[in-house]
Image (cartoon, rainbow, N blue to C red; front, side, top):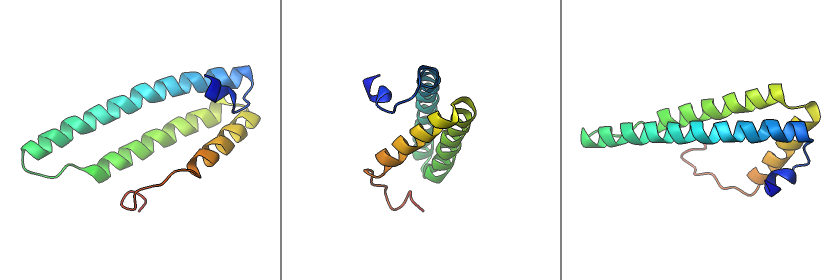
Length: 100
């Protein structure tokens, strides 16, 4: 919670973000579990897992959550959140294969 408060959101935007993050966590865990199950089945069948398909589903899921936040947060809230996301992204490294 302290990490989220550093973003500088008002109390309404913070509540919306917390709810969205909780929902994201549940949905993302489900997406990973589904992929793991299909990947195990593919490996058992002697085929390759569909990693690109997972990435597409993941990207779509993330975009859906971002769109929901865009429609739920105040203009200032979304600007603060986007600034924080860009700051965090500046410290990340992406695997070359996934960045394509």
